[in-house]
Amino acid sequence: MTSGEFRLAFPERRGAGQAVNANFADQIALEGLDVPPAVFAAGEALPLRLHWRAERAPDRNFKVAVSLLDAQRVEWG
Image 1: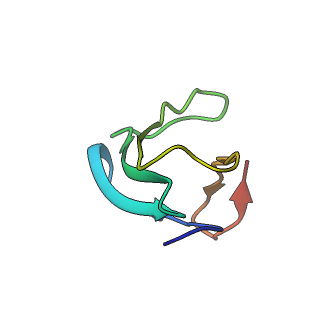
Image 2 (image 1 turned 45 degrees about the horizontal axis):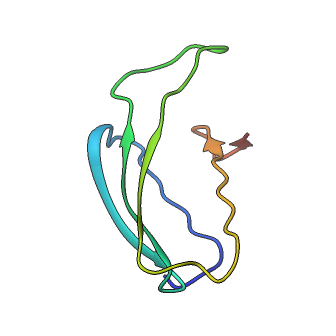
């Protein structure tokens, strides 16, 4: 992955240390993420940790957005 949109799906995989290894324009890399190993109720916080690495000084600003999909693949967030 060099740039643009990047989607991850973890329907049954939860817990610390999910490897991703996605590279964005050879400037930053998403190495992995920690997905909580629990089910959350409406209104509860969902802790999500993204692990980034700088490959070199970025030549532009990057934006990160997180969306959630339900079982019917309806996007929330």
